[in-house]
Image 1 (cartoon, rainbow, N blue to C red):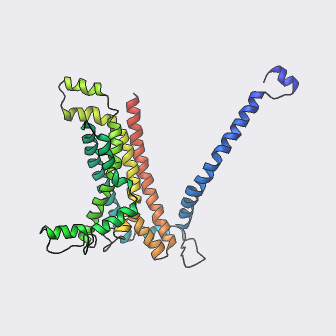
Image 2: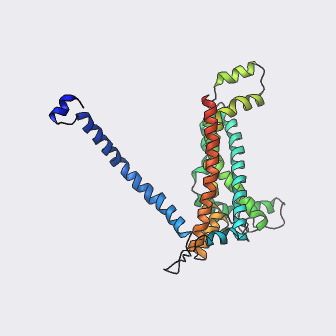
Image 3: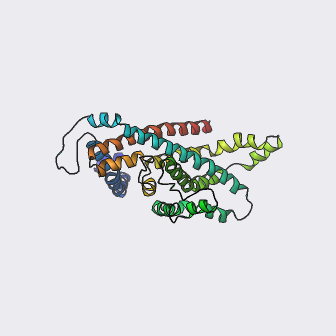
Length: 310
C-alpha cells in the first residue's frame, strides 16, 4: 500500500482482486471437497468407528468393545487363510500380468505394420466389465454345456467333463489365469507407451559399441520404463488385492474356501453373518496393509526419480 493510499484511507485494488481470486478459488474446489468428504472420508471414518464396536445388522444398539474385534479377527484361522489366499492371488496375478504384458509390448513395438489393429484386439479383455467376464467364463467352464470341458473330453484329454471352478484343487488357479488374462492389456498398453520414449540414439550407440539385446534391455530399456512399471505395480496391487466382483462372480469364494480372499471374507462376515463390527475390522486391517505396501512402493518410486534427477 502506498503512502497516498494510506493517507486517503483506501485499499489497493490489487489486494481486493487477489482476495476475490482466493475466494473464487475455494468456491470452485468446494464441490470437489464435498464429493471427497462424501465418498472417501465418511465411509472410511465410518468403517474405523464401527471396527471398535459390536455392531450387528439385526440390532439397533451397539457398544464399544475397544480392540476386542481386532484380537478376535487376528486370532481367527479363517482370516489368515483369506489373507494368504489374497497374497497368492495378488502376487500371481501381478507377476503374470507384468510378464505377459511386457512381452506383448516388446512384440508390438517390433511389429512394423498394423500395430494399432493388434493393440485393439489385445486390449479387448480389458474393455469388458467384470460382470460380463465372470458370466462368460462361467458359461465356458460349465461342466455340463461349457465349451472347454467338452473340448477336453472330445480331444481325449479327460474321461468326463470336469468342473474346473467347482473343484478346490483347480478353482484358485483357474480364477488366477482368468484375472491374468483380464489385466494383462493394461500393462501392455502402458509399457508400450513407455517403450516409445526410449531414445533411439542410445539404442543405436549401444549397438555400435557391441552391446547385445540383453544388455541394451537391461541398461537402456529398463531404466526408461521402470517408473511407469513401478506405478502400474502399485495401482494394480491395490486393485487386485481389493478385487471382489470377479472372484465372487466366478466361485463365490468357494469351493471349500479355496478362493476366499479378504474382501469376500469381509463381505460374508458383514452380510452373511450380520457382524458389521467384525467386517469393519477386517476392512480396516486390509486398508492398513495396503497403506503400508503403498507407502513402501511410493518411497521406492521417489528414490528412482531422485536418482534420475541427479
